[in-house]
Image (cartoon, rainbow, N blue to C red; front, side, top):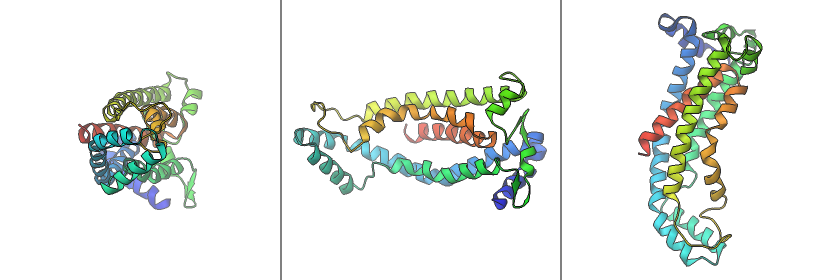
Length: 240
């Protein structure tokens, strides 16, 4: 943890001439961008996998017709088709999972008053009037919604809501485009076990970031905002 704290502090020191008092916040944004660059090859692979899964939809439609009365055989046939074509239905989850360690490092770094037996100096840094180690509840208790810190969160919530709305519309379009047309009777099975429920829930997942931003330290919230914005732009380019 102390090594990671030193890394963030060094980045803040480098950015100090450009960003002044908000250098630590800029360092977090830069750190997030570096993490996303490292994960980008996996994001490209996930995009190729998504396109490959889309290309399989006609074959899956045929399997649905062939096994319309046997859901278990349908599931097995679809799994075999994915294995034969070397397409993983869950490959798109990997980039997100690999970012979790970086998020939790930031969360713990700005949640502890001491790091490596010494005072955590990063807690003294701010994004304008909002301390990076405090949460939305702290901002509401210190000046309210339209106080200095509260307005910082208003800006962050606005940015997150805009990105979430963009992701919602794009995910709905992709889900509709990748749906397998079929006249299967109700209850006759799904393309993959649980995939139908996942497709219904996925468009709304972006709005969960609003809750995350509200309860984590501001530093971790900055990571979430930067990462989700990056992801929205990246996916718009890769899945165009």
